[in-house]
Image (cartoon, rainbow, N blue to C red):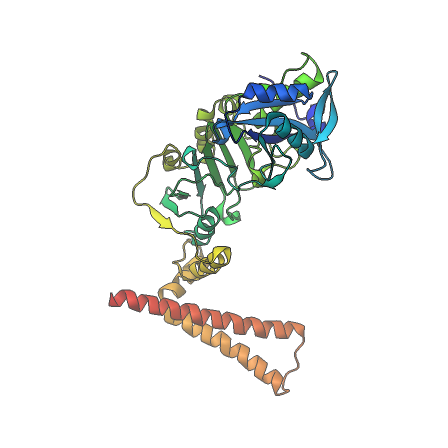
Length: 413
């Protein structure tokens, strides 16, 4: 097993990038891809595409220059008599490999280059098979987080099941989907949070604890470095590319979760054994974060009891945002602090909310009326306060009325 230290000069100069090679009309062997890379002296490592839940494809990890102005102009490492040297760009290499192998080559999860050199956008789910993928989202929060669940379901495009247990909310796609949403809108109030996935033979996670930087880790079956002269810088770089989880702590296929530069350190709880064995990674991370048992049970395919469900919003993310705001205003407040108790009082007694909204709205209206009659001269700050009173008072009256109507309907039913 090859490891590196943070001061490894190769890692200071070269980063890890992924190409995914698939032959539209037939099976593709890793040995074919390795031979094509070796013929062009590319420093790389190859792996069967079952890691990405795409049987019959091959994942290629190549070294690219760090610090390039953009990922599109970053050059791939070539073996120059044992020394890694800049070669073609990733897109140029993708075109060469596509022609050599008569295959489609996906670059960075965004662009597909065909054998004829034509380019098209890659599917959002990376072409993975949904039935081979599982994902869970877990977080702690004072609120039940409808404003998080609804946007999550809308982004995934499928209903999201969820349970609340041991102070955690655990959510997962109800229907098989290969789409991963690595930034579902968690905020500071939700820390710690955890996203875990199994995609084919690969297990990975994105997580964050309070006061710490988020970390990303993945474990998958070992990759094979492309042949090179032994005991050279090029062979060492190829060996590093064969262990991306250890190298940069990230699953490179998840674009939105990718780390900048070296990224945060992986917690000591995720030791070598966890990173080397996919079966150990998620249980180790679960213990580190104190996740409830149901999180791993869902990843194993078990369905818990008393599951609720959130369906995608009809009007996309705009509809999800509007519904989320309404849920924050209308759902029963949680928490034990003085402010939470006050919010709970106004939720349980809608007439109090109506009285407060009416008083604030009248205050704002009086300020505007006095200015219009010349009794008071307003500056920008006073106008802002008057508008705030009017908006807050109107919103409080609307939510109070909605709570009162909802309560009367429930009483009637």
